[in-house]
Length: 302
Ligand code: ASP
Image 1 (spheres, rainbow, N blue to C red):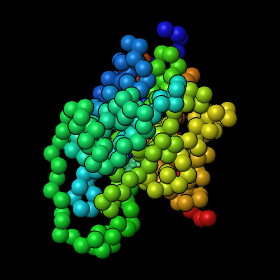
Image 2 (image 1 turned 135 degrees about the horizontal axis):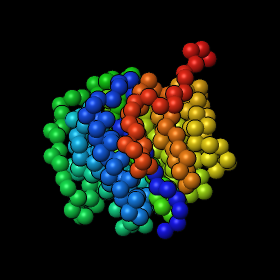
Image 3 (image 1 turned 45 degrees about the vertical axis):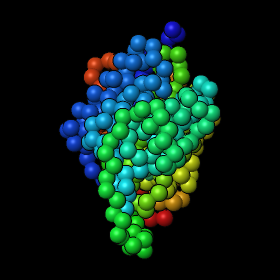
Image 4 (image 1 turned 90 degrees about the horizontal axis):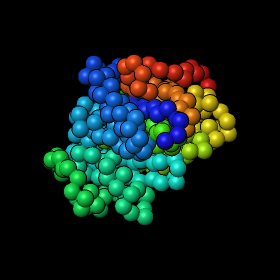
C-alpha cells in the first residue's frame, strides 16, 4: 500500500432546509462505513457505494427507500458511480422497485461494457442480479397529462439526494450519487445524477466530484466535469467549485452544491443554497457533519 491517507465525503442534498438530527447521525454512520473500508484498503468506488447504500436504506433521504415520487405516482430513481484510475463509470436512470440504485450503477460499471441503462430494462438488469426490491407505489392513472404538465412549475429545491466522493490508499478517487429526483417532476424526467460529467465525475489526474441541486441547471453546464477541468488545470478544490457554481448562478440562475476531493486528499464542500447536508471523515476524531459549508453568495442584481 502506498502512503495516501484515505478520506471520504458524503452529502444528503442541498436546499432551503437545515439538516435533521437523524440525517446528521445517518451521515456520520455512512461516513464511518466508507472510511473503515478505505482504511482496510478497499477501493474508493467500494467506499462510495457502501456509504451511499447506508443513506439509500435509511429512508430519510430522497434516494432508495426514501426516493420521492413523480407526478404520476411512480418512483423512478437515478444513480451513477465513476472511478478515476481507468475512468470507468456506470449509471442507471428511471430505475424502479429496488432499494439500492447505486449498486445497480456499480454493476453496470463492472459487469457490462455500457455506461448507462434506463427505464424498465434497467430494472430488469437489477432483478437479474437479484438486487433487493422495494414495493412499487400505485400509479395515479387518471390524471390527464395536461394537468401533470401544469404542475411542473416552478421547480422547488429540497434536501435529500445523496452522494459521496472518496480517495483510497492508492490515490484513486471515485464519485457517486443516488436520487429520487426533484419535486413535481413529469413521469420519465431524468436529472443530472445519472449523467457522467454532470452529476458526477472522477479522474485521478484531477479529482472526484458529486453534485446535488436542480439537475436541469447542473446538466446545462456539465458541472462535475467543469469542476474537474479546473482541478486538472491546477486550481484547488474550493476555487474550482466556487468558479463553476458562480457560473451556474450567473448564467442560468441554477442552484446546487458540490463535494470535491483530489487524489492528494484536498477537498471542499461548496454550495449556493442556504444549506447543504454533508460531512467528511479522515479517520481522526469524529466525522464532521453539518449543513453550512463554503457558501457561494448569490448576486442580487445582474
Ligand atoms: N440533482 C438531483 C436531480 O436533479 C436532485 C438533487 O440533487 O436534489 O434529480
